[in-house]
Length: 201
Image (cartoon, rainbow, N blue to C red; front, top):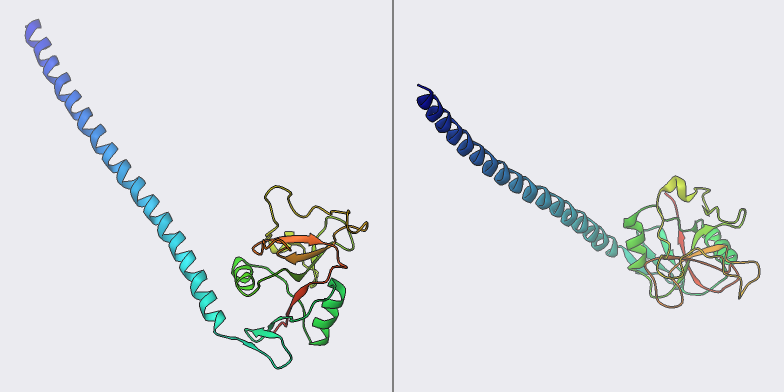
């Protein structure tokens, strides 16, 4: 009787062990499939984001033309200067056109502007009032826009370098003289640069 019970127990243990192995194998298969679909979904979203940005840049590029006074006009409200001015004078020129230095508040806008320049340009960013508190010409702070594209390799920006100008670097530009056009730099407001104006609707 005892031997029969032990034999039955062995059989049950064998069946349970087999079931456990099958469940473990099924779990592993399902987990691997879920992992694949998670990666696939993430890559699909990344691809869609890149596609949307490229499409936006493509359509935006269709609306740029050279105006009779030498400005490149895009989207009907972005103006790229042909001449160079210091930051303050650049802003005066923009205002005289019913515009102001450009405010960058999205990756799409950053990408669009970068695609249109071949050298550094002034943008509407400064910390003239309070060192380290960067503000756009429309009084938005970087904290409010939630968007920053400062140069961040090696000597990080903004660095308020005072070798060329003892008053420091208090004005922002898109790109620098070394051809790093995809990021922002702080520079002496006295420097002569091309600039980007923006007219709000």
